[in-house]
Length: 133
Image (cartoon, rainbow, N blue to C red; front, side, top):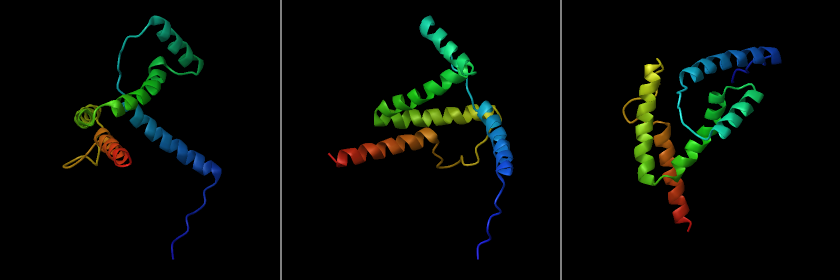
């Protein structure tokens, strides 16, 4: 017979969630990488104003917006480029995280990182789409 889990009060769950967020925030901060790019001053000023309105830094706010576009750009690549660039990005990300003292326990022989797995998924979706035509 399975042991029943103890039901936590909402307050205990809240404290557990706060501890978990604290751990994740520390990792998330270390796993952030600064990227600098130029775009029209008018747009940059509006981005800063919007970010400020919501109590965010321009860098944090812009990063959240831009991340989704990176995924869209990746999907638009040719299958060969997705495979090649995915492997390159995963290797660079591993080097960067290691430089920050972050090691992944799931790395090793035969390891595929996030972008390589995403490339495989895109290839699978492409193949299924071609089979259905």
